[in-house]
Amino acid sequence: MTHATLNLNGKSYELPVLVGTEGEVGIDISDLRAKTGAITLDNGYANTGSCTSAITFIDGEQGILRYRGYPIEELAEKASFEEVSYLLIWGHLPNAQELAEFRHRVTYHSLLHEAMKKLFEDFPITAHPMAVLSAMVASLSAYYNREDEEPDLNIARLIAKTNTIAAFCYKKSIGQPFVYPRNDLSYTQNFLHMMFAVPAEPYKISPVLDRALNLLLILHADHEQNCSTSSVRMVGSSRTNLFAAISAGVCALWGPLHGGANQEVLQMLKAIRDDGGDYRKYVNLAKDKNSGFRLMGFGHRVYKNFDPRARILKKAADAVLQEMKVADPLLDIAKNLEEVALHDEFFIERKLYPNVDFYSGIIYRAMGIPTEMFTVMFALGRLPGWIAQWREMKDDPKTRINRPRQIYTGATTRSYLPMEQRTASTEPAMLQERELVLV
Ligand code: CMC
Image (cartoon, rainbow, N blue to C red; front, side, top):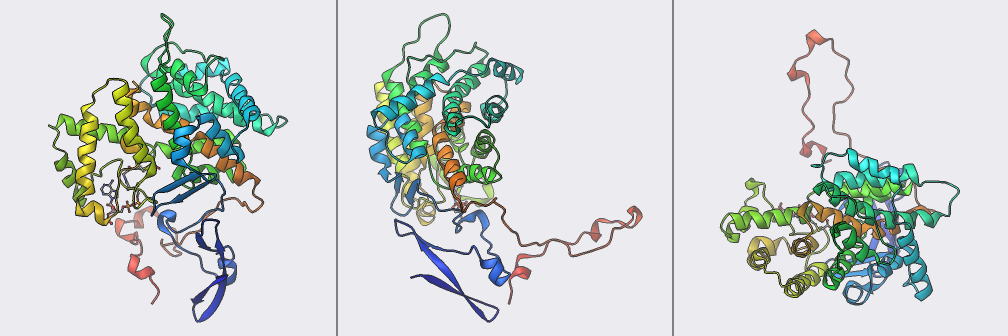
């Protein structure tokens, strides 16, 4: 198969067909408008490939996720977050020297410019940590964006400093003094230290928490062209700086249909608990389209069988809670909810399964991380993926500024009306959808 044929207004056009290394087929419409005058319309981009990419492969039908060819299950079991970050950004697993150098960089660049502390101070204590995170990441460009520096230096800075920023967001929200990073700790240990240490006493980092955090960050590290990653690529395509592009990704992630879902899941589970634990009632509510309620942590644009990350996390939630000797009734509610939904015709028909956000919050909660910080944790994990995708976009000679088209449905040309002649009825209604369909 080398081309597809399009028939439009009695004319036939040949369009090239690309096949990816895993057999995915894409019809290349790059010249469509130039050749035919027409564009494609694809609500939510569900059928649109925005780029070619060699970073992450997902097969949603079979529940497969691989970073640079490595199955997520193997990386989750064997790798460290630093190794996975290196793998995503530079394309291969680091050897001992490469890993040591990378670790050194993301350790020794973890301090924030002292002037940035003042920015933290001026946010209200009630600010959502994602508001603070996005502003702080964008602000890094004010302190560290020199053109004459080695390009990868800012990548190391961003990874190192976002760890510190994320922990400072929490300290700020509870009114405690910031705890500075330590150079003798790993990336995940440093995060736990900056989050939970207080000046009054030494903080002992639990290896259980360290392992759990490592796992969570790895599982979130990349997910090909999702909403936040596409935002990073889109904003980055204007050739803005790395920090500005990543900050756009943080903002996109915040929404409840994307990374913000992990916070929503916990709130939903708490609401079910406070309402007497009747999870069936909430499954029924989610099936009722008029209720406006969705089972948060359920469904995915790509996964239509299971989300491999959710499988790993479900097991991990049990293990972490057991190891930490924590009994959380929310975990039981989550399992019951999953069980009922998985056997319900509504969810089966629509191929709705628990996604990564369904069990992650239970683990974060057991770790002592407050609900409002959950999406920040997602962002910290997704950071190497965003950077890898930004770098790939920037270095790809085919990259053009992202600028989609539209089908205009507003008023056709009309003349300006003086105020006394204006009434509500002069506004034409938007064209109805059926009028848009050519017959
Ligand atoms: N609860 C109840 N019904 C749902 C749900 C849900 N969580 N998700 C989808 N549906 C229904 C939806 O109403 C629609 O039904 P119908 O065909 O009868 O109109 C059908 O399933 C398809 O849904 P959609 O909204 O068209 O699917 P989408 O691919 O546009 O959206 C999604 C995907 C993840 C935004 C959506 O499933 C959702 O809102 N889930 C809850 C939020 C959530 O958990 N988000 C985290 C996603 S995973 C982490 C990440 O990568 O961001």
